[in-house]
Length: 337
Image 1 (cartoon, rainbow, N blue to C red):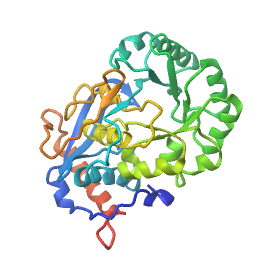
Image 2: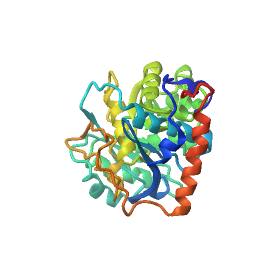
Image 3: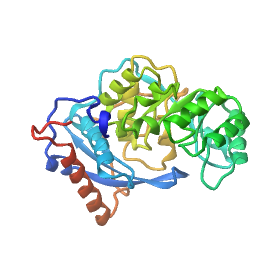
């Protein structure tokens, strides 16, 4: 988090000592059913504190300033715990990776009762015809579809693609910049959701000032925690969707807790991605009737890393990364920024 976002959800709580975090920290590699975000396995780190388990799982290519927000979120979970909930179930969407259209129906069986599906589009190496076919196959099973391009289109490509794909609940991050999102929104009249333009932006409020989005997709870990996410959601004034950052069950608990604490939640959240993993460190969040129930992994929860822990070299890599990010979070007062 940089710029204006660095102070989002500032909490006056002491930063735990690094050795207190590292004492239980273990890096794990979680195998996946389907390639997603270019990955076939998810590498992350978990640790336990007085309030429960936390996750530190920034993607490996992220630099330390960005990764430090993920550590802040993990510390909040492990040392502070979840905010007060206003609901005990959170509606979730099915997630369709960039798979062939003929595999979609089988994949959607993992999301019983889901009334909304998010379909990945604009995958490198694929065509618009692939996207159209995947969306059509999804509509045959789940009628309400949203698409996510991860900023993969130009304005012209986005306009052509959205017209070819047809009606969608919204298009998530069709292009990279706020100005491009605004241009697509004006041209096609399709609701636009901003993801990277919020969580990776120096100023996340530009999407509102530019009238570039109808929906804000927020992710607890990269935004620095549950409370920071709730503060930002409140200030943006847009419809909110809380999504996973391909979290383990530990990180997912924080995402679900954040969604459960939102005063208003009208759209299904992207918190059903646990089904993309073939193994996890704790019991996954099972989708039942299109929703997941809230739960928290307290300090005595059953969490296991047997067979999932990475080797000594990767353990050292993650521990050194955690040390560097911990230094970035600290201040002279010893309190978290």
